[in-house]
Length: 336
Image: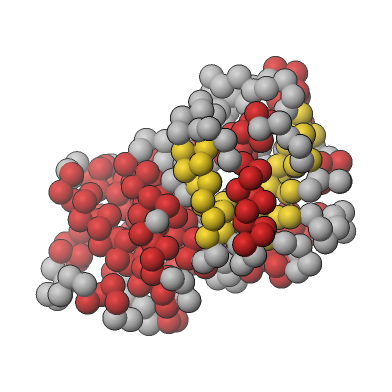
C-alpha cells in the first residue's frame, strides 16, 4: 500500500483517486472549495464532475494542500494544464525530493509554450516525474469500464512504479520512455477533437470526420517529430488511441465545445455552456505559435486557430483545407 495524494478534484482526478483507493492505497484528494471537500467526505459523491457515481468511503478530501501532500509517496497533478505551475509553486516548500510527481494534465503552458514536464521540472527539479496519458474518459473509468493508459518517464523505474500503482483488472497501464511524444500526443489530439466537434456541429458526416482524424494524426506526428518525439509513439495509446476516443465521444468536452462552435455559438458562450476547462482551445493557440516558430506545416491547427480567433468562420476553414495544393499522402508525415 502506498500513500498517494491527488491534487485536483475534477472528473479525472476523482476517477483516478477512486482507482487508487480500490487498489488498496491510502488516498487523500485536494480541492480548493470547501463545499466540494464536504460533499466528498460526507456524501461520498462529486456530483458536478461525476454525476451518479458513488465514491468509496475510504476516499477522503481536504482543502489544505500542505496536509494532502505531506508524507505522500506519489503526488498526482490532476489540475488543468494552465494551473500546474501555480500548484507546483504552492507545494514547492512542502514536499521532499523523493516524492514522485504524476501529471495527468494534457496541454502546453500558454505563456511559455513549455510542455507540462518542463514546467514541473523547472519548479520542482529534484522530484521524479511521470506522465499518465491515453484514451480515457473519467466517466467510464469511474464505472470500472476496461481502459488502457501509458505511463511515460525518462526513468523506466519510475514509469514501472506508476504502472504498478494504477494497474488493475479494468485499468491496464503500459510504459513508455518517449515522454515528449506522449505529452504532445495528449495535447494536440484535443485540437483535432475540437475540430471534429465543429464538423459535427456543422452537420457533416463520417467521411469528413475520418478525413480530419487521419490527416490530424499525420499533423500531430509531424509536429511531434520536430520537437524530438519518436514517430511510433503516435501510433499508440497517447496518439491515435487518444485521438479516436476524444474525437468520437460526447464525454469529450473538446468535441462538445466544437459542436457548439459549429452550430454558430460564440467562443465565450461555448465556454460558459461547457462549464469546465476546454484544453483544446488553449492548446490551439500554443501549438499554432510553436509550429510557426519551427516552420512545421499544420494546416488543420492553423484553420482551427483562425476560427477561434474569429478570423474566419467554420465553412471557410473547411474550404481552405479542401482546396489546398495537391499532395502525396505520406509526404507530410515524414518530411518536415
